[in-house]
Length: 114
Image 1: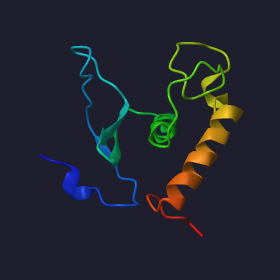
Image 2: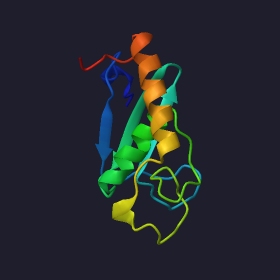
Image 3: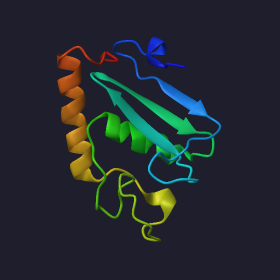
């Protein structure tokens, strides 16, 4: 079934499913994905996804690619440092997020909370 009917302007829709199949690797599950169809973007999460996966996918939604910053939740590299609970967005990523959000609000693609 199409999800498009649930996606409206200036709203971020997040869908949660019991299982999310990796389309690139057979028999592998993923925890989250950001999908783009033209101007429409939305997030699908697996119920096995930890909370950081939503933050990671929102990073993609607001223009961040995967990263190599060790502290970044946008970095998908297996690592032990810093500990998972200490990971966040890197300062450069935060600046890019702020700029992208401002641009989206000015373009009336995203509604301001003010």
